[in-house]
Image (tube, rainbow, N blue to C red; front, side, top):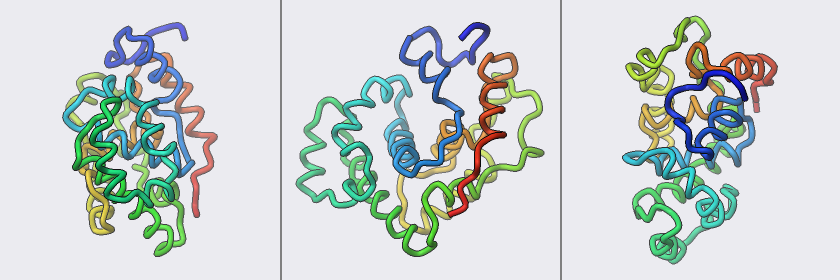
Length: 202
């Protein structure tokens, strides 16, 4: 990619690749969305580059983030992951990942919808998005009304580590909002992908 980028990815090749090819691109696959949800939860209190550097290890540890497999993890699996130095060894977040996998299965059963359809139903209207997203605007707005509502809704359904800020970061990562700053070479590309993206309904 040529041209300017958002400030936050710096010059780390892994971070730059994530910015250029993944962040903000719309996602409608439950497995990928579950992965993003879990990793955003693990990121809380840490830098995202720390999570990116460990992502392949996370994928290996959590069975490729296949929801049914993670939901079947037993206490012994949690103990095993707590001892896995290749990931973030936070027992609460590991337990949360298993809990949230089970919550996804319940959500599917109770609503008849995929995780993707449930999440995308909370997409903010275009009229509520900043017309000129700058570094200052984005740094001052780390939640949205929809991420607050989604957080409350998911918590009522038994999800954990799904606060409004974490869910807004998920919205950014999954392309529900386009928060590439004005002037970033990716902004127009992402907007075009969002325009062509078929929002999941079931």
